[in-house]
Image (cartoon, rainbow over all chains, first blue to last red; front, side):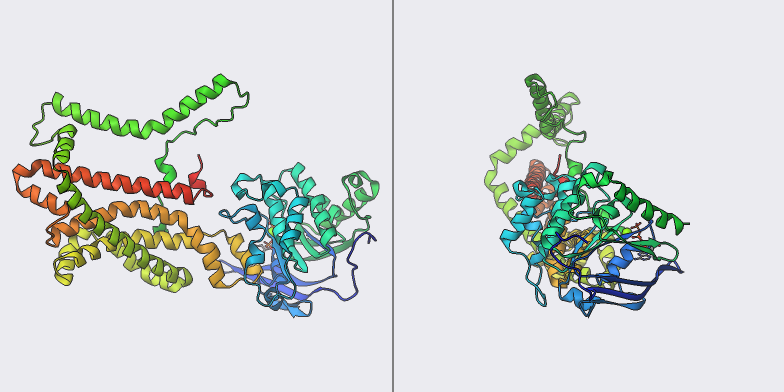
Length: 269
Length: 291
Ligand SMILES: Nc1ncnc2c1ncn2[C@@H]1O[C@H](COP(=O)(O)OP(=O)(O)OP(=O)(O)O)[C@@H](O)[C@H]1O
Ligand SMILES: [Mg+2]
């Protein structure tokens, strides 16, 4: 854990997933998307869910966010169940596609979710000035009146990040937000995300199937395996913060990547 | 149900096909830019060229093949006959335009109410689809007399026919549009616990706009069909449909038949252009408006 990181990870976990299983019925067959998942996430922690396609990463993320109902088991967030936490506006979501509103400008898009009904919110959203500050930080200050179709994919995804951070929500849920970007843009986006996160200090649950990405970003990596979807291993990433691209050449970094790879391989197939 | 696609003719289909060369050519020499501009202007004028060519062929075809004026008059004769009786055509066009407009507007309002209900309830949507399809596939000409018997001669019957034919495209496109919202956006709204009403107003209604514009372009033609048909069946004493009915019965009024057709075509074309212009302005964000 680094000292530069503003929000300390306290002992009481913010998110507590216990005994969660999820089955889907697909054309008469039962699919075990998740079986007996236990996971605790601390306040201000950056946790990645890493695993092969179909191992239930998105499903787990959605269950934490109250977007899917667990078949068995419980999720508690700040002492609330996931649905109540959703009603209390505890979550900011960053989907894989930027999903900006096509008929709204960038400035309107990043405020789109903050503008939706705020009854029951347990915390204030960011002020206009704070949101403008985020746009500045991600390099979109000159594009506030542009429409999504006028932006590159990377710029759209940056707007999508700002939209989530603007909610001021304690937990950000990100489902492979950079998967559709090219390798160069993706590398930039990782450090941009870390920059935003270190300014604001929320908790992030980040789904990825990139080992490098998980190693660069996370305090802790939860390695998942498929059929049935489950947690195979957990690794704390002790690399110092703030992290920077030069770190990716360091032997410690390669060490972390090697561990994660072997965890993945061990439980695959 | 795949009925939605029946009416979702996109405006892109009406635009010239091959990609127009982009104006920012990489090496940016003035000659290349000039050439690109010329090609763009040629492409943009293509629709006008097509229309003019059609009328020229008609004009000279009648002469070359020596077709009798009684069978097929030349466009120039039709235009000059309209010009010679302007007030007559203006008066009757106004009647028909009013009927078509009212039917169009009534259909739009009712269809939006219907689409809203259907977008909120799968059951109601599924329950009403068969009826909607029935209305769509039964020829209006077949039940027009029944409407007159039910509603009596006059404007009421005409409006029932006009709004009935316009209703289905608005309804089907409205429902399809309201359901066409990016599921990621719906999930985002759900993640902050947005209410159904907010999702409807902020996401579903605006998403339906492209479909509604497509519907409007189709409904223009249908509204004119409804109005003309209504005038023919429901005992009107004015309007372009009435004028056509009279002309059909009297050989001496043959030019009036063609004059009324021309004015109807003009009204339809003008309304379509108007809608497309508004569409380009309102839907600047939508992919159908990009070239
Ligand atoms: N809504 C659903 N209905 C039926 N089955 C589903 C549904 N959502 C997920 N599943 C199934 O659950 C399993 C886990 O899916 P999930 O999307 O969580 O995987 P993932 O780890 O996110 O994969 P990817 O990396 O490809 O996104 C898969 O077998 C999938 O087919
Ligand atoms: Mg997924």
